[in-house]
Image (cartoon, rainbow, N blue to C red; front, side):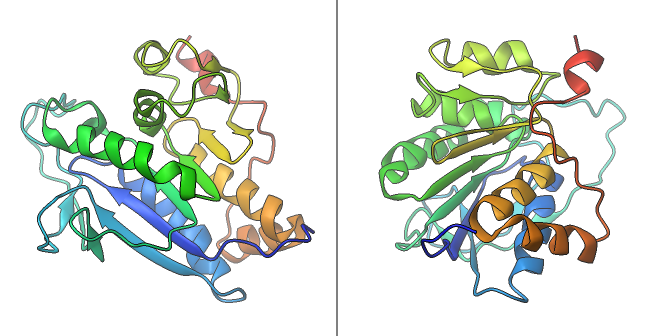
Length: 228
């Protein structure tokens, strides 16, 4: 068990077209953790407008989409803050991936600027899936070990050739930066983060409580081969 007090102030960065499980998997872990430990969770919209408009998982205009049938199967999250007035006490920032992370619109740029400005004050910076590309473009991964979504590996790694990319990893911790593979890997990483800061017994209790089969091997991600 770590001797220093664990972080308690969490924030999730949201932008149009974020991947839902990138957010809700780790949030389920943190929400369950909050039953036994003091946790405060905020949702930050990457909008500079002070209005707390819901942030949708629908692809924003101009974003790539794999939805040729025109299906509507989106969800939205009501943020607690926007970039007009972000939380001032964030200790742990979670950056999800999603089609919006590679949109030509302003949201990715605003996210990158926020990550760059906020990182020096954070105790932990976490990314899931293509969220690693936003971290890479912010410059915080230069010289660090990192991983990301395996299906989009070429584009993610090109965002910062100075990072030490590890394709076989399910998740990677380098100092206070944690990066994980595609979508479901974020839940495994979140449990790994809990184990590092609260102890593995707590992480196991959370995994059992949510009836989740934790892939507790950060070095192995089968999707590195699925998408090879």
